[in-house]
Image (tube, rainbow, N blue to C red; front, side, top):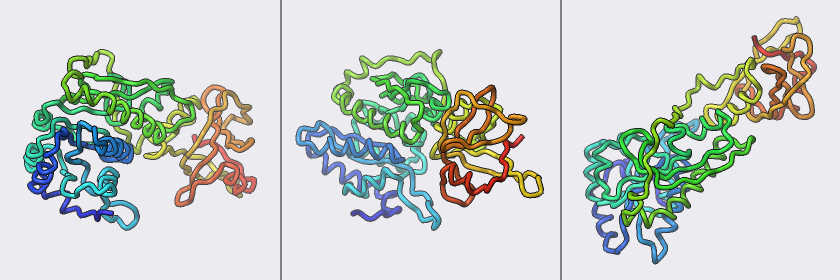
Length: 358
């Protein structure tokens, strides 16, 4: 396994260009892949496997990803999932670039020397300036997990789930300076199960996007894809802004379905949190903060008292919500503790009364 060396990945642009030039002795077309998280690593894997085929028309000349970041308790600098996948596959370390910004002069200079004919992005997480977009003659193509022009932006899957959509998909589109607004080469629809969470849906859509990309690569590399690509109707565009932790709180004065959709959308990061009241032995409420992990919707529930009491039934906490709906919480997590089932949590209360927070 190749060893991760941050200085090597950040510099060595000249040697990278020489390496790519040497590899360019074949008739294969040079493409550069840009991506960062695990879902992007799966796209890179698909490209590398396809490029290894003797009859492949392309080769991955370089990989561009986010710089190493401090992770886990030790705060050790670790490569992105894409960088690690490339290294694990034996991809040359001097062909993995990690610029802080895609507009850095040294990076753009090194990229030009590679002479890529096409760049492909998948959840890269960095803004691409026009000087970058002008380099590859066949353009830059992005795998975007939504049916463009719907859900342009950083969190298309999460915002679609939050809205409770029944159908989404993935689009293959040319990158332009305006956010996710380039002509669409192709797209595929996907029916959304009401229980699926954001991390699962992301993985599914990028897997579909990988196959879509391989199918369309010949037309992209011969230029015909640009002729058939359809401009987006900006009047139909919706936006998917990045999630932030302040949004993670659940408010039980909303419908249970709205809250369930939010739990699905915010799964992974930042998660969803709620405050409950635990009545202590003195009959006074203690605030109990929980992280809500998995839920279902109970279309109607029998509310007791003033409708604020949290009950337990089957294997779920039943939390009264707006109207006659209840949110069934099946898994939760207390601060500093491991994820637990609703049943184990309820048993741990030892008969203490649990209420919604006002």
